[in-house]
Length: 304
Image 1: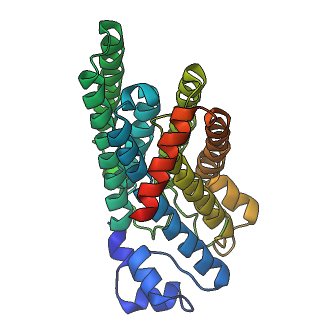
Image 2: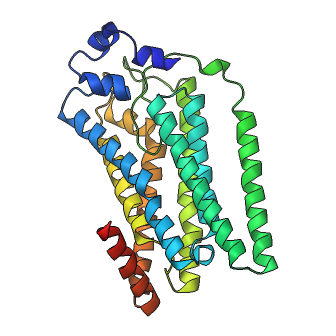
Image 3: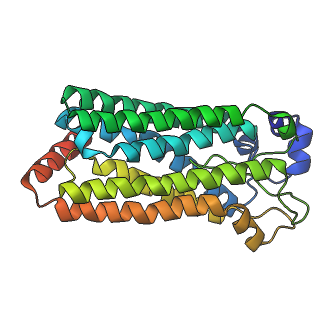
């Protein structure tokens, strides 16, 4: 297990990270030796906090308006859940740090709660049979995806190579390159790269159906602006944290960027789509219902 390497004795810390901060090394498995590394860790932690609380405003908005089934696209929720599921599976396949595994589990549970609320309001509002059929078909696709991913995750014998893991934000599959020189991807890096690429594509795809739903309704009522605001902040801080991190000794900046390209695309690419959704909030905020709902949500959150 790589945890044994990262969380080993003082000899590992003194030899592998002689000028680093001890609590960051043992707590996050990250060697932070200068201001650039420390800033990367702080921004990475901030991104995790943003993602962890991002769903809370949507829970409140859904309970307030009761129209979650029409406000949110089911495919937006399913693609988001699929992306987080890839992160969860990959975090165990690549044998990542406990913090990364726990946050990956939290993200999936938060997505499942969101999907459960969507299903509740869908049934409560007595949607048409055709809409219910579409919902069941979408959920069936998700179940098949989960089953196939679980089957693929069974063989793990090739993933036991020990290596220290780096700290990342919501994209929990990023792994560090070899510290000696620029070398090709090893087995664990390939696993992380593949799952990171898939999850990034899923995150990008999730925004498109929500953008279409907003456009079709000409309204963002029932969709919490703070959900996307916090995700934008999380993706921004995560992307900057990756760019700030010093490459490993002997690894060039270009090689470092290539190794982390899927997560940069997933964060900064999703950021651009979330900004488009933010523009939709401004475009459709002229609706009296949207304005009233937004003011109530803002007042309630600020009061709390």
